[in-house]
Image (cartoon, rainbow, N blue to C red):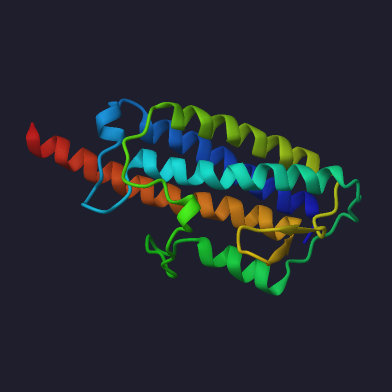
Length: 188
């Protein structure tokens, strides 16, 4: 695949995520943003905080890959495991195929979170867009660490994994927002 096409697709995904997060959080009170759709399920802010925790790891990792100075050849071939892992993140027909437990250090816990969580997410998304632009001149085949201990993906696979992880949780946030809206309608 051409690197330019691959990066343009990731950029479009990140822009969609940004727009949807703004729309899905708009007009909700802090209490509603922290409301669990069911006991033990993550609230909207918990989902966003979970993504923020991944950004803390991946943003510096991606910047480091760009700063290594290896230029790309204009093509990117997904690795077998990286590509598989990336695709496994995406929901299919509104359902998550592979259920996964969050790593302990990436679990936001059952605490009430501040609205700043959304602001941090939007700021991190701008950093990801900057990284995508910077990656246009870099090799997407550079090996980078992942949050899976001891596992390294190609930069392109790791970037796609990260973005698909966000798309996965965007789908979760949509379901949570729908549950909040239904509860709101039932009360009124």
